[in-house]
Image (tube, rainbow, N blue to C red; front, side, top):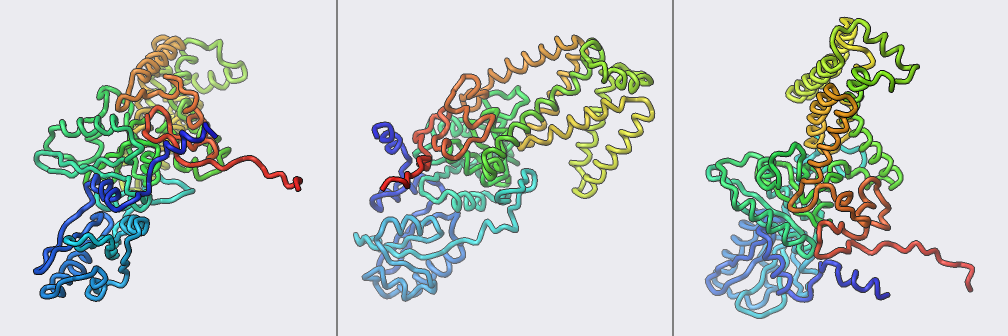
Length: 504
């Protein structure tokens, strides 16, 4: 009992005791508006989230109607509003829970400003923004789970977030960056969960950013990163709504700019780039299997070609006898050393991938399939490469696509080339040197001050449970400790204790 008490006290507060507390938390968000309607005989206050309501309904059906109807009549009670406004869904209440839930569902709160009447009118002005025909995911597709993604309009993106995180603790801070573009940038976090040090670091780095035009959130990532000389992405860039929601719930900070469909979430670790939201929609055994398979594919993609170069150049004795004959037969007519052979095929794959990405979807797919088959077959028949290496490079290219985050797949594509050159110079020793340099570089990286390789280094045993494997929901009720959340408890896990039906 004593062990559960601190966890209960540490749970984030999502319900409020009075109207003033609710308004105080809501006012922290830039998309929360509290204004006044000036009438000839009195003044009304109106409060709402601008990303959840329809501005046309607000201006014409509410404000304009009140100004016409109450131009010569004083409103003595808030109940009189329902007779003037041509909207069906109007609630008169003083219940704080009803007010909170309605405010987060697109209702506007109307009160008589001069009176201390606790009653208020809740008027539904819900916006239709965020409809599915504008926000289908394209680059982070999943078979299981929602397909909702973000669009280029920031207000719609905030609208989508508020429909999923339906509490006033979701805070949005808007900044204006770009001396020419004056682009709106939003910092999103969960009040009572996100560590203030991470939030202040992001805000300080963004405010000190002096640039002329902001086109995309990717520019912001390069500005707020702790290290601009690394090929590794230090923030997760995603277009998926569920991935951003998970990040906010865990205690991360999300950043988005107007005109970009991609959110940045951080602090991020190396493992965040190999986690797919689909892992959490499958049973934990299957989710863990696919996650391990994905990590193994990435390791294979980075080192497969370099191991081929090292073995065929320096270490023939390490090749099994059964494979040695076919390998010698496939390379007997190839005039190039293994390193040139590998670089030729790797460059060909990169050319095809870049060409397919720049062309329209249907043409790009056709080019990739036909080009790969034709060029590969022609290269083998012309004795420019061996058929065994063609299989290895093709599998390596396929394995690089298993990474859920596109920017990390670009990093994996890049890392293959320096390791291939090291293997060509010193064989297996070169690969070991490459691994050591890679580990030294990665362990020195930080994302908003958080070590990039946590929970492996520094070792955090409690946070290892959601790294290599996807654990059951019964053990993921706590937020990661390396994020230093203000509230560590996410939810109460269900008890595994079975009832004894034999007892009378």
